[in-house]
Image (tube, rainbow, N blue to C red):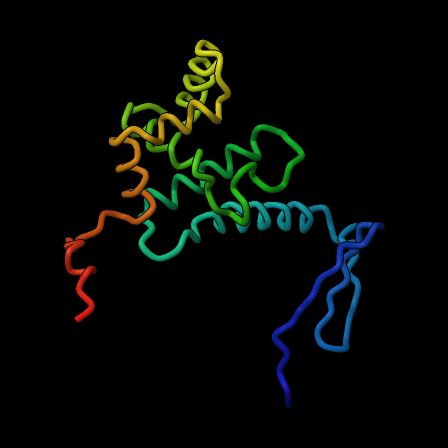
Length: 167
């Protein structure tokens, strides 16, 4: 018996969901589920969505995972209709997010507080927030912290001269 790896879902205009496995399909109508199960399904969805943000890849720390999950929760708690986090593409942080998070950590403040400070400073200097964040990213302390956050704290030292040898 052949196994299929492809399971597809289609969200229909009427609110139903069609599931297809190989050449078989069925349609599920969430409106027919009990109110209690609808609440449980919503909670399950939130748990899954926010927990998925912890899938940052090899070398990510518990702090990295916690930070990504918390940022996701805070994003949805803003009450916006966007499903995907701005600049986060496929669950990944934008470079600006890394820089802001690193700067907040260096300053010992919450990320939300740092975002507010950056917005105020950008306005004061009459530059865009993106330009201000980019400038922050050129600071050696911020760039180093971003690298550490992305890669974890490497435990091996690398001699760049070794990389020049082709022998």
